[in-house]
Length: 112
Length: 115
Image (cartoon, rainbow over all chains, first blue to last red; front, top):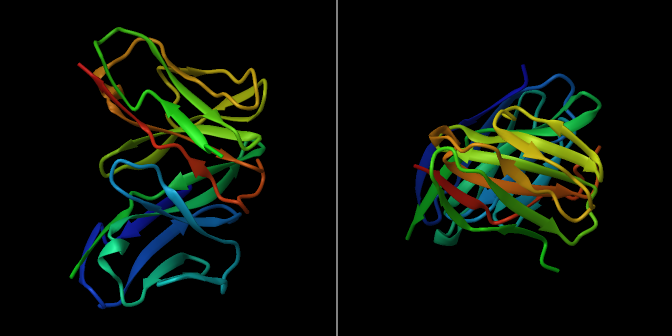
């Protein structure tokens, strides 16, 4: 069964303290892995798509990497405005169509 | 562009009542889907559509119906509301049904409480 597990559930950082969020997955034939950011009371906002092991993508203080079993979202020198829930999702193929399978998310709080 | 628009933002229902959650997108996306988000469980797929007239079930379809008569609209109907359907509902759309190159665009959600 396709599955996505994110860790930690919650992370508290001081401003400027770099860290990484983990997303481990089990899927029969990876067709893509997504990272989203979700602010309270809002819908998820697309950040990155990764397709193959070794691929990396960057956006401001965020960098996403992918291996055959997991993905990391590295946050360099975070600021309070980076506080949000970060969601990981994999593309699962069944019945002829793609579907997104989400992890439960990591709640990140960055304090000044 | 408005993106994905969901209405209403908040709703309280009594057990047994029915209602329709509206979702509309103006990006000419062929793929649309409904998710529910519950604490600690992540987003779970309810129903999805790969084009007008084509719908299919996701992970948790029981108690919900959908239809897709136009490219733009994908309403979600609760047939007889139950307290277990208390959740936040998100509609999402994507350009391609087979690749996520452009990501999935989500609406801002409908917070539903069933009492």
